[in-house]
Length: 116
Image (cartoon, rainbow, N blue to C red; front, side, top):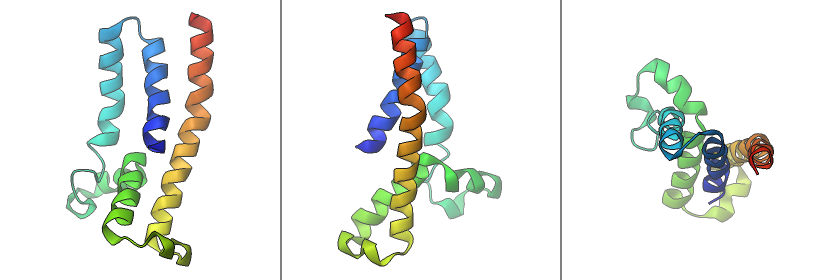
């Protein structure tokens, strides 16, 4: 849910910056495409070409999907305190969410104030 909130601020900025609905839709697709389709959401990392694996490893969608997948499939959230890859995925996802919010909330609010 936090990741959806973070991306909604990106989309709010795109929507406020676009001239009309069609332009906002086109701009959001161009922006989201490399994040969603070059992630581990649909395909395992090992099946991707090497150059794409480098991007998919640090892609915020991949990191978040891997964190959620790890928590849901491997269960036992209480063991996260012991460390390991699940903890790493979760912390990386939270770091991406925080960074996205830190960048895009002020930009979207600033854009909204200029248009209002």
